[in-house]
Length: 346
Image (tube, rainbow, N blue to C red):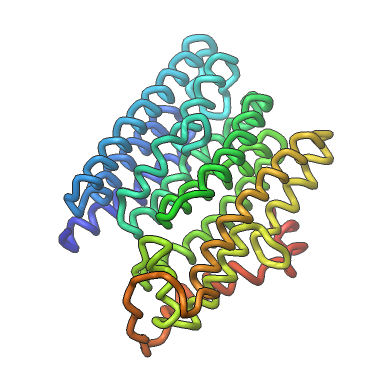
């Protein structure tokens, strides 16, 4: 892909996201979502490999269906109430259709089947965009309509997402698929709290974006597609691998790392809302992630020779680690002590 084309697609991506998150009218929000979808498609299929083309096709069909549902939901609401304002979504049927459409856009269970396949067929940098930037506009729409969405439906979807994200990630060997199921599981935590405290959802999303960006950029630096090659990367950049270990544990939500903060606040808020069974269920289901994150961390840093992998050892790289990755990794592991300040800001 030429630099000019890359610039056009990246600008369109930013434009689409900005239009959606700053609009009050449903048609503008829908237009932003469409620009986003069209901008990311060439980035998914740029390698022209059959798997990439298949991923782009799946992504296009799913997002087109979800966009049609968003439009249908807003038109139904306008038909009954005469309102095109995003915050005035008051009709129950429209609210139900919109929740399904946004769940499809985000990859929330039971509309999650496309996400691991699309992520596996995309390059790592595009996978990063799909896991972070592309989720911002739907999360924003859900945030703006949070007073009128059905909390019971969202809670069921959230618990199901956390369960499926954990279970289906257990036996994966491809790192991108593991990160896709990790994303589905984290979306469950965001969805369960949005009807009660939408700001906590945004905090969770920001911290998840921070940690996932650090992991994706590290994997892109050490060029690792699966667990077998991850076992040989400790020779390449040992310091980066050591930090990857901590970032993965943070993504799992272990204290005293950054990833524990949103889980702690969400469980606290659910307890305040007398939703102790839901809090217990989602906490227990997140323990499934404690198998595959440490598995990744173990493969990355603790697997030393002799072992059974047949891959060649990598050459040690003496060039310094990218500053962006270094900053992201420090933030991904050390923000818990300043949690009182973060909670006052939100």
